[in-house]
Image 1 (cartoon, rainbow, N blue to C red):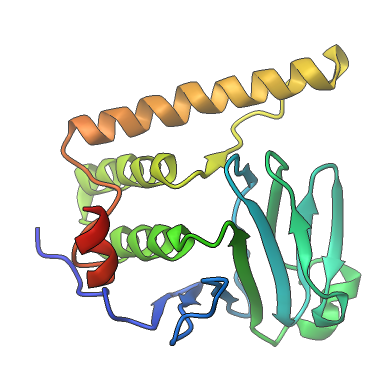
Image 2: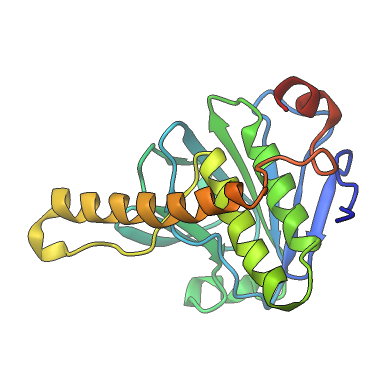
Length: 214
């Protein structure tokens, strides 16, 4: 299927917002999220195992889940550290009293990782690429779902499906959560690869990266 040429785009937009890839790339290989006013979309609860992640609110109010805590953050709060294996998510804080002042303002969040290996940019270029190029019909929806998990599995992104039984203790809860994600996301991603889907497409990926890692 023909794909949108996004390999040299500095910004990729979708109706709910978009992602900016600052040029020239900074030493942290950061990306900037924009959540437009009115959208209720969030990043979804997930974790990373290979990298420490950092968030910094550049504009607006963000409702951030970090482990067991949920709080509103603003630009004055500075960088937020997300340790490896820590559940986290963020989005607009419009429904929270502290976020009322920014309901008409686009939320902008800078994100980067340590190590700064550039994978975050490749992840979002390919993820947004398949969203923009989604085909109509049932197969288009199924293919998108398979594609999302194929990409997530390749770039250290683990979505939360269940939190696990808290009454059995934190260790059991964490194990149930992890293995449910490994089974579901890993299985769907494997099926995607068996169907010929990829975690990186030439049309979406900067040429120098694609030439090195394809």
